[in-house]
Image (cartoon, rainbow, N blue to C red; front, side, top):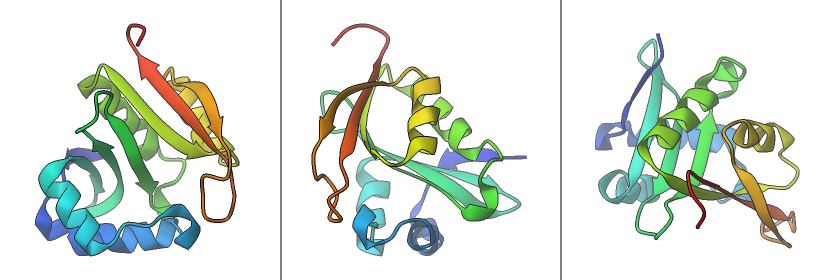
Length: 143
């Protein structure tokens, strides 16, 4: 059974391994120091199955509208509802959310749209490889 829980400092190495297996240098991968900071200062939920971290979601909470900064699901867990469970968790915990997603990541865009996220604008050349990003938001009421 998939278990969602707050990440802790003992998870840093496993989170970093997951991060590096999912994201390349063009997608701003997080370092161990980044994970340490975010575990202490932000909202970082891990998805655990069979004592292994299958995914995580990081929400930056210091903004007026909390920002989903990163969502990662291990390759072996793709298609098993891990991303969906993590997004559902943050949608349950936050009234309003925003995020940026690669414009060429149709799987992620479709998943966010299923949860009511709407594209607000296109950010040209957002990523180091010049890929555009979509800024998406979700709210129970208007901003």
